Length: 147
Image 1 (cartoon, one colour):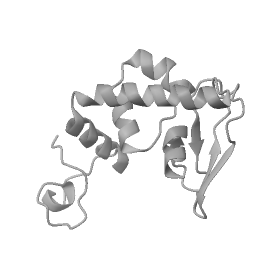
Image 2: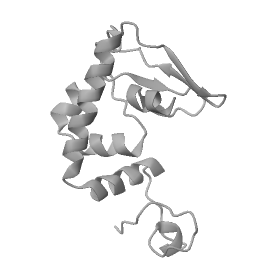
Image 3: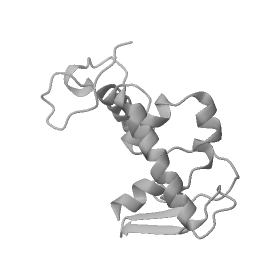
């Protein structure tokens, strides 16, 4: 299998699938943001561990402020976050643990870099918001930083 960089904007980079592909060749079935996450993981390399540690410190600090423990015991965390008219997110609160991951490339890169134990026990209780129209998922920190 041949791996390409994320899709370019110009269509002339010579590295991405769009610029280098053969008509018969099938495109990878993973979503675009997954490939961005892989590229982000490669870009940051060993520094990704430091970024992950900083992310968890900020997440713990912010969730403690609002009394969030898990999707069922969510304290005073906001149930809805509206960025603009087209970006309305609702807190996912169906199960105590979930298998959702934030769609931002940095969060996906941290998730891909994490050990299975962390994925199962830490990421599964993060406050995740879902846009019901696009089904895009965002973590609490990414949404708060966008506001």
